[in-house]
Amino acid sequence: MATNTFIALLRGINVSGCNNIKMTELQQLFNELGFKNVTTYIQSGNVVFQTTIEEIDKIEQQIINRIKQTFGYVVQVIVLTKKSLETIYASNPFLQEPNIDITKLHVTLLSNKPTENDIVPLKTLSKNEDTFTIVDKTIYLYCPNGYGKTKLNNNLFEKKLKISATTRNWNTISKLVEISNL
Image (cartoon, rainbow, N blue to C red; front, side, top):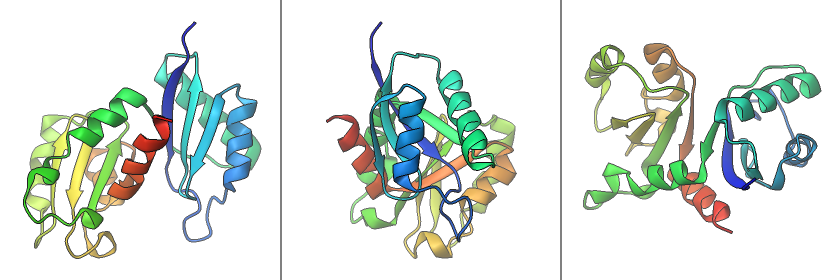
């Protein structure tokens, strides 16, 4: 069986003193699940790993169950294939715009593809200079005044689209692509 590279993005860990998981503990948890070449990146719950399991929802459920068993709380997990992450990275429409400040780019990853009925009302939410584009299960977000000041945040997208989401800045996405290619 072939070994494939995946990226797990955990939602809402190590934020404001809640759902604390040390990256060494997270790495150990992934190793205990039988995953190989496990690498974590920063404290927000980004894990690159390899496994022969091919079903993403099975991998996600294993991680969710083990975190609940080990730490006593449920964390949403979005798992991407290496290829999916590379496609997300290569497809950012904001990178085609002149004078874009990449430090103001973010990517919100969705657990499912939103319906067109849910997307249409979202289009009215772009405020000031903040703007976004939805491509499949990815929201590309540009916040020139900073992510901390935008109303277009993870919680808003989850509420309006009625699906789980997690957001990463462009630097994190870039670093995860780099790590997954090592």
